[in-house]
Image: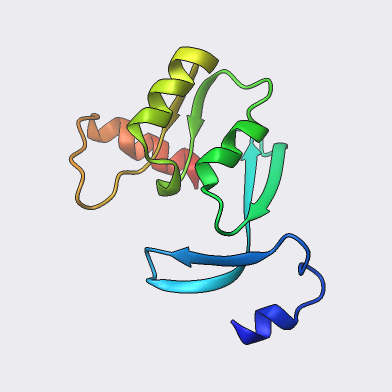
Length: 116
């Protein structure tokens, strides 16, 4: 944490955040990008670390409809429902270990393969 505070490149806009998965605090920013299936970056944003990354998602959704594959940080039934109703986007994410998956295994494998 001390070394990150001395970094002058990203000092402006950076802040102290908490990673629940690693159970540790860090200094920095969140980066969000959208990449098309052909590998082209179609949207990007960076936010301060304490901000919920799900809030920044709406900044990069311009012109997107259909399937959107995200990481576990975007797992939220409320967010999923809002994207379907208002933006016509089907957000699919890997599930956490304590969640049961009702999707067919072949669909989950295809999503994981595409995301990689």
